[in-house]
Amino acid sequence: MRTSVIGCGYLGAVHAACTAELGHDVIGLDVDPDLVDALTRGRAPLYEPGLDDLFRRNLAGRRLRFTTSYDEVAEFADVHFVCVGTPQRADSNAADLTYLDAAIDALGPRLTRPAVVIGKSTVPVGTAACAAARLQTLAPAGRDVELGWSPEFLREGFGVEDTLRPDRIVIGTDSPRVEEAMREVSAAQIEQKIPFLVTDLQTAELVKVAANAFLATKISFINAIAGMCEQVGANVHTAAEALGHDQRIGSQGLAPGLGYGGGCLPKDVRALIASSSETGAYQLAHLLQGVESVNEERRESVCRAARHLCGSVRGSRVAVWGAAFKAGTDDVRDSPALDVASRLVGEGAEVVVYDPQAMDNARKAHPDLVYAPSALDAVVGADVLLHLTGWPEFTEIDPGQLRTAIRHARLVDARGGLDVGAWQASGWEVAALGGKLTPGGRR
View 1 (spheres, helix red, strand yellow):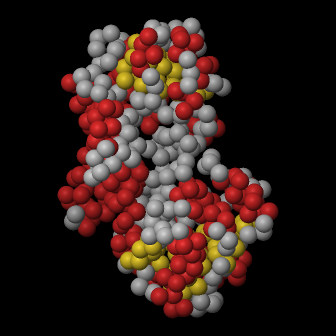
View 2 (view 1 turned 60 degrees about the horizontal axis):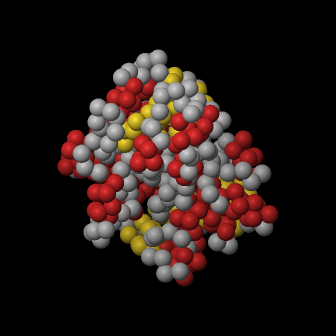
View 3 (view 1 turned 30 degrees about the vertical axis):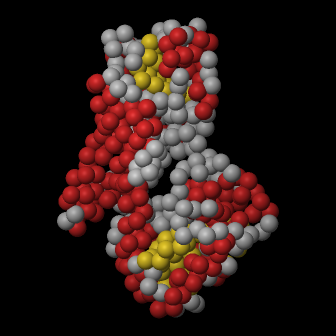
């Protein structure tokens, strides 16, 4: 099929490359000419395993190209995927639909022949119906332009896999033509027996934010249990493993640590709090406010653990391993690691950060921090080390080697991936989230 992707940030770039990989002809549009230039040269807007290979292969195969021209997009494609960002508004928890409105207003007047528009952006319930009505008003083709909504369920670090082989495909529509177009685009996945669910627009809009809110709730629940473990001397990682064997609960997402961040979960949880409050679903709003509160407390608990080990962080040199909000990405949006680092700077600490992938983005977002070229360089002369992003690289480092580089051998393991026993045997004082903190700093 001849398809377009409107908006080529993380979601749009992954969707464009994967749709081309599935055999369709794709033109991607973004209003940022520098981004379009980079994409045309095969450079993805952010680190995502496997994405650069898809770009190179499909650009070379002429199944994929990029433009800043809405005229070109409208002339080329029969199916248009809208993948623009819907960030949190600056003045409230609600989603900012500015980019979505701009895309509809730019594309609509150029649709002079029958077309299908499929939204993939995460939006509040009711947005799609308004967009559909506006499109038909703006488009010269009128009612021959139909809109559906097909939310994405990508995990950063697994975006290519989740697009090519998703757990499910959801399309919200009451139009047979929209459903048929989506089935044709998704033919390869349907052949793989991937569930294809057809529902109304409102349910399709809600299912994405509901999925993210449930995951955030699961993460906050195990972190609330971690807080109790710290008080009573239990081990949250063993508790999480035992819970994960329960088929009603499952282990995915049940990883205790520093909490959630990134460009999706925080703003989607807040947007659902806002929309549930507006629609009178107050129990949901109150539940998610609790989820947010637990997530916020986990960040403060790391600062508290650092103070516990150092006595005071004022004047201390703090080494931080991790800047990305999670391993497998260079995304630093709402990064718990960088939030903790900034809080400690505010308390008078000198903070030195290292991350395998996210250094450039971290420098742009937090120029107040110091950055080291390696994990070892970050700890030289430090008074405490904070393990804040769970990169595999950090689990492979010999704590005995680091013992000779750091001024005071103190560790806060906020991600739970390190062998605490081995670090303690090498002479380190350890505060591990999810275990009782003793006066000596040991679990």
